Image (tube, rainbow over all chains, first blue to last red; front, side):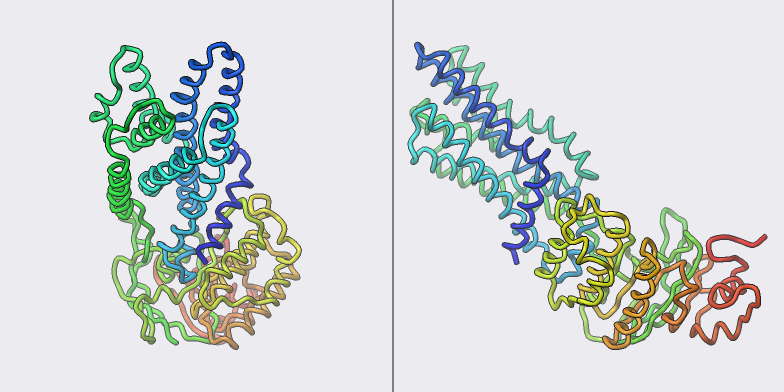
Length: 253
Length: 240
């Protein structure tokens, strides 16, 4: 039953070409730019590698997770609410947790498939082992687990998919650029970005970025041990899940 | 099974829509809920279905069930969910996730769903969406079935065939069928009982045959005549 819900979720998302391509196009644009820069700076390979590994790969993954954790899931859930789909679903006898699990399985499957291809594409441009790909995928999934319940909170607060879409842009900017810009400007000023990570501990994207930087060989270690990141992300997920239960309400009658 | 409503009240923003509805519904019977637009028919249906909370009164069934609303299946006027799924895929999804789903091949064919199964919901016409909503409501297989304007958007032949189906379905499956409809003239045979809602209250209730005998109107025969005699209005307007 959960597999069926997951299957139909993926089918619907793939058929919604505009949203689907909107979700996956940005990471692949970064891949294309990486390819271009790698060739253009062939004589200065270290700089190209640094730009690709330090900026383009983390940005691609952050955007991909953001697209699947928030954009598509939030818009989908907000539309299900607006279209009164849950009124139908509650009469089928399936429990809501089962239904949400089906959607989550669809979200995770799609994200992992696309992420694998994005990383595979980067592997053709810069040195990256399958072990690196594996670890990046593991942490990406944990970040997705940490952030996924947020889509229920947003869908509970926002009226429909269109409103959700417009509200997600500033949220994405805050979550992404608070990490990437801090890293960039602190590095440029000759300081260690990790000294400032304490101020960004609220942002799960930080953990992902830190681990990617480490896996790519740009830092000698992560700010916190990786297992602590995974624990923190699990705590994030549980807290957001509890909040989501309060905000994502469907009239039970 | 018997569904009983006692003094059910519902208001929106201080405006009292239902002012104390008391009525009983029995299985194997079809009930027509009649009234002008905005009188509270859909509100009453949503209260029965559990989509709206009631402010006062009581709703109960004579079976041992934790939440009586789980016994109700309602067909909303339109189905707008799963826009990027094909009609046959939506049906398949509901078949998979519904406990004891009842797939009626007869209804599937008479609504023409076999012909439009390949159409994405976002491209489906109003009639096709209505047909899907109707089919899913039956597929859910609940003891109480509430249909909101089931005949609207259907062509004449489908309307007639649907009436015959609902007549048999209700009796053979011992369902409580509650229909909200403004189209009554051709379907009087279907309705065992008629309830007329007027100004938030039940103005008249009784077996359709008995009401027609009680309010025999030469100019407006049948249920329309009953409605006129009770409310002073014709269905969909008012005689000045």
